[in-house]
Image 1 (spheres, rainbow, N blue to C red):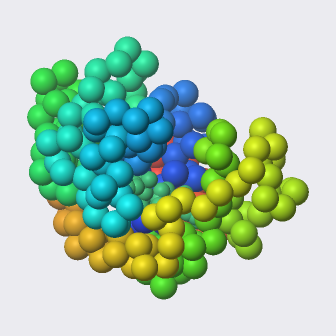
Image 2: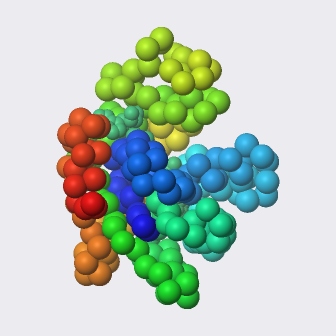
Length: 214
Ligand code: AP5
C-alpha cells in the first residue's frame, strides 16, 4: 500500500504517520526527518536544507525530489510506503507520479489531515520532541509522564528550531496555497481522503483506518 499524509504544518501528519505505518507494516518516510538527519550528519545537503528550514521556507525541488525518490528506491519500500511531508507542491507530486508509473505503481490513499490554522500555531509552539528517538509530545495535549523527559527512552525533550512562533507563521503562509492545490490534484485523481484533524489523536487514527478500508 502506498500512502501520502497531507496537511499543514502541525496538522498531526507525523503523529498519525507513525501509527499507520506501524499498523500497515510499511516504512514511514518524512522528508523533514531526512533533512534533519542529513544536517545532524553535517552533509552538504543537510547544511543546505537547514538554511531553508530554519527560515520556514521550502527546500528547493531538485534537492527534495532527489532525496525522496532515492529513499523510495530502497528495498524496504518494495511493498509500500507512507510519505509524510512529500510531495509539498505540484512539481513534486508530478515527479512522484512519474516515478511510480515507471515502476508500474501508483498512490493508493492520500490522507488529508484537516485542521484550522489558528489551532496549528498553538500545536507547533507547544510541541516538544525527544532529542534521542524523535518521539513527539505536546506540553498540554500530549505531555510526557515525567516533565521534559521522553517516555520511551528518558532522554531530554527539546523544541524544534522552526517551532518558534514567527517561523511557524511563515511555514503556514508558505504551505497554505500549496496544500490546497495538492488537495485539488489528488481529489481529481480520486485518491484524496479527508479526516478531521481537530479530533483527539486516537479518533483521528480511527478515521484514517476507516477511510483506508480493510
Ligand atoms: P516537516 O518536519 O515535514 O514539518 P511540517 O510539514 O511543517 O510538519 P510538522 O512535522 O511540523 O507537523 P506534523 O503535521 O507532522 O505534526 P505533528 O504530528 O508533529 O518539515 C520541516 C521542514 O523541512 C519544512 O518546513 C521544509 O523547510 C522542509 N521540507 C520538508 N519536506 C519538504 C518538501 N517536500 N519540500 C520542500 N521542503 C521540505 O503534531 C504537531 C503537534 O500537535 C505535536 O505536539 C502533537 O503532539 C500535537 N498533535 C498531533 N495530533 C494532535 C491531535 N489530534 N490533537 C491535539 N494535538 C495533536
